[in-house]
Length: 474
Image 1 (spheres, rainbow, N blue to C red):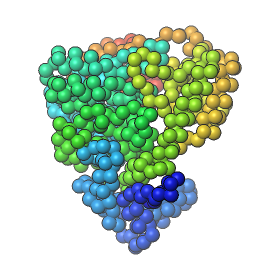
Image 2: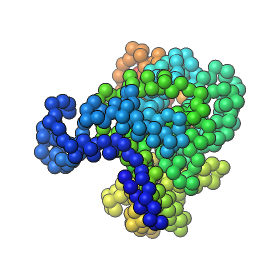
Image 3: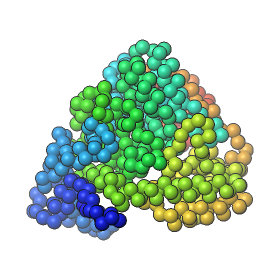
Image 4: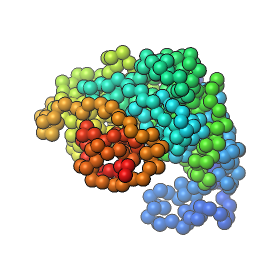
């Protein structure tokens, strides 16, 4: 791909998987192999019309058309991963086809062992916990700060990491999430320094920060701050298709990259989608291109514009870094006086046709994305201004202004022991005092309310409104 800059200089951006798929499309062959729909000829006509003939014609796997293989990485796929490693500042990059979940599972499976203690934050993604269930390693919980007014988890302090490492000499890995789902950023540089002091590798689930390396107005990415291994969900904010992510190993990493690669080989499908792989290749190429850089500048500018306009409103507020932490400007968490986040979400969706990233009792999350235009933001601002000046009610919220407190887990059994124990399913109302046998974590954001081995208490029940039955240890 070639771009022309304002100075009439041509800039070439390579996208080897995209180019290989284009070549395969332009030089069709007679196919007597999978996938069985054979370039879309064997699918439901309505679906073919919806998705398009071209998309179906390039839906193939890495076994054919000289497209290379994923495990081991060869051909255009290998080249694309190498280009991604260079773009993100990594020694080695792996493409992931089951989201960042696949990367977290591979880290758990390849780098931790039964009985090891892993220092991780209680608000980590459920896939980290699943990785520990697979390996048998045990989490030692870091409890981040809590922003009670916003009812969200805050940043992880370096002091809490040092205290844990100095108190427990059997911790084999620090595995933390940064930023939080709502965009709160921790001091990774200080945490990395502490980890190196104790000789413990630092793994950062940076799923929601794949854009940080491509604009100086965003926080510094963990790969530049001393992390040993980093996960990025390109499909969340980086422009790739859903279910596609990347795992990066840093230049001076303590971890064994081969162990991660072996685990990925076991966990990944043997028929990887070239469309998803190409979307990762394309997302990286776009972020490095002049056009992609302009899109990111626009996303940041749009976010700042939205925040400025919210500051002028009387009853709507945005989360700002007022308490000694940083935030990602493109993630705008807002709340409205007298309205729950759920109610605000429904007003925006039903009355104005606006869909948000997520909503909680306290507020809702808006993302300023690469693809959003200034007119998108101007429309959103007009709608929020109307809500700010209107008199919507939210009876449930007004009757219970106090948000539920942070739940401190009472651990009765190990994750793996509880998960593989004999179980029974009982009505939720009879579960208090029993030991959970399942991971209960709604997505988004995938943070666990209950884990296998934890005691179920009265405090959990308000978070389990969507559950009639709970799986417990028999």
